[in-house]
Image (cartoon, rainbow, N blue to C red; front, side, top):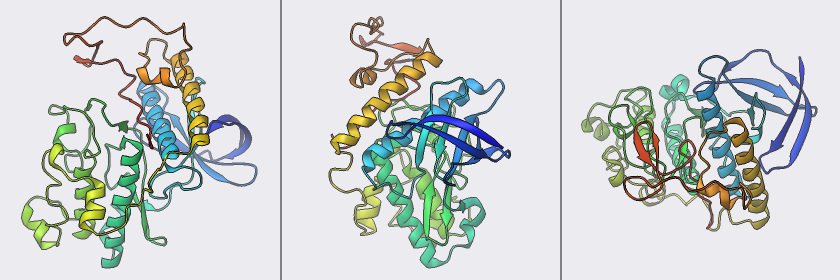
Length: 348
């Protein structure tokens, strides 16, 4: 089967391609489906699309999350330095009634399938690789918020893990929203009924610690501190399972405790030419999203990207109880934002 795709690459350049498609679709995140496609030069990609039916509006949000996370990661990594520890966005079509994202093929198998069989040296490589990926997320200002053995892959040949499925991701500074899922992988501050506060680079550390224990213990469920001592993880994971404000960062775990080099080079995300292209790509993204969701609140950061154009920006909303502009979202008074996103640019 063939299809014709018109999209924009992650840097913003328009592209058009005749592709071969695989009719088999499979889950790709919350309210998302994926299929394999091949470009004319046989480059294989994953096409992520929104599920049909009553959950389609949620799927739009989840797809937007993936697109924004992919662009921020590309921005902070710069030219040719994209970290293989995180899924790589190739391009997207955000403006049509049937939007989609294109990703490079994932590398590895779900940790839920292979994580209980890693050898000692592979376990150590997994820990370094996982924290490396989280350092890059922190540099981009992104929290994944759904790390688990189903969203983290292990590539035994390359001896490297890969973080996938950014459908529930958000950026630092956004109010936390509830994440549904097993309490084994969702920290208390993100669970329904107890979520609160704002997202930071420490949000993913709780689940990362659980993943490290999962691999080191070959699949045991963590129920008490004694298990950390038995697996030799007491020092590495000290403070990881406490309140978010007291948790170590990924960099502190990797660099200070494991004595590994910082994977994020100084000045990451400072390439002026790339930043200009991505700014234009983001402007088009805001424009397309407003067409899809006319009633959505336009975040302040969109103005920095040139959208809406000067003279077309809406009046400020009325002040909330604290004197700041506010809207009611899920019963909470929050500053205007669009589905929880606040842009944070790497490199200043």
